[in-house]
Image (tube, rainbow over all chains, first blue to last red; front, side, top):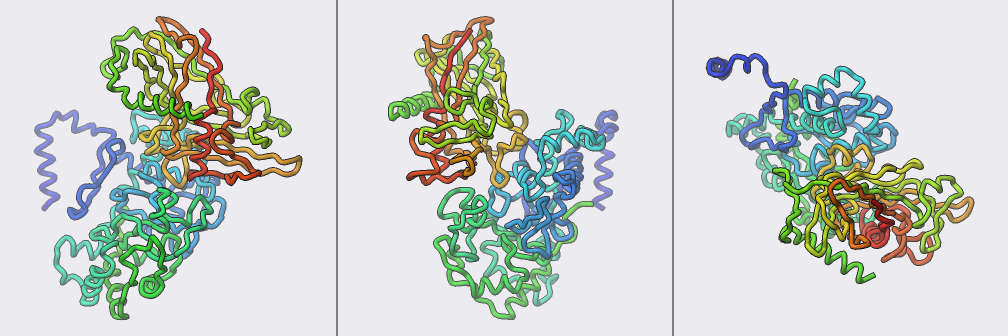
Length: 342
Length: 269
């Protein structure tokens, strides 16, 4: 029905418009990223709003190991599409060029347009700036940006794609980051059973266990894992550690403190979305928990007290075994197999 | 020392009130100002290790510089952003801000990054008593790093774990004797370390008239990062480590270089 309406509308428009304009579409056609109403409008920077060609270019770059110094590591090497662009199985990734262990767990990539900061501590203020982190980091892709631009300029396919995506510019570090950002903003997770509920408000689509789990989630988890994104996009100390004096690796173990230099931010990390949680083990910023049971155990028994511990966790979270079973059932409704548009 | 800081604060104050100053030469980007656009200024900075010798003249291992704390240092990289260049007449309040002025100067791989300096064309005619510029980039420019030109992140002046530019980078080593050395890695950045420098120009100031060409020659002395307000050394009571990336120590180093690193050599016509 909707399809027919669209076609009708198209026909209607084509009668009123000059035919020449209809035949030659603009090179940088805007890209309509479908977003459910309860997400609100897709936030995009005015200087880099998505175009069809920009997203296509970003997607090609994302999967291309040319972004690494040994031409073996692409963004997708660690951000694996099948698991919500996270990285399963290993706690510390050694997939970077140097094969050294990284200190933080590969974060998921979906619904990124709504995030205010990137990396676990929000160190990057926008996706455009974030892109240069992993690309240039010696233990990740270790790519020299000058070399990268030179190489891309020699590949006819890329020359053409860049020209289409950014007709006024030549290939540059900036436009590489712009394209990657456009692609990443197009990764929307909103095709889960939970989303069907959000769209219809019909709780009968949940099983009894799922429904019960949803209720318990609303009481104990939702304050930080806020609906509908299941994250508040904020930074919290959830009691994993109590000592943040280790300032090695540029403050990697100090949480958001290394970004703001505020004492109050020691040990704070961004709330991850619970969407796709069944796909994204291991858990926590450093992937220290391999299984959900360890996560529940942490919140029930092992919260470590410190100056910056989130006050809502001071008394730990009290859950029965049945609660946990039900929450896990609810988590099953959060898995999305359609994040990337084919 | 104190009076210098007061001058900096005063000029900063002036700078922030600049919009209120009545001036005939205040440039407006749109439409093109109907001023008698005219002079050219070549802006050049020589990078030295002791205020005298240029860094590239010391590129051999045996050539060291000595800091005010009597440390022997070997400098491999010395890079910094110069931004928001302003020519000002302190008497009339007239000023000219070089548009989009962000320049990466310095020394790396035994060569100067800008051996010929930069050219400021289209400077409105007049007499300018002061030269002002920032070391690093201002808050607005520092907010994101996906930029082109001088601010292209390909110059390795952006951090890979936090958004922002390194304002000034010094890399090298302290040399204790023929076998013992200790690394120096100073990466200074963050908005709070952005420093604005004001220099009085000699002989009544810089004179710009139609068709005139002036050369402003500055010196950047890397050793001045190690002394001034704070002692930066690997001996004695100094607690500043060899590796500094942000934090209180970065503020100390920035405090040092804001005081004495940049000086005017001469103006020639």
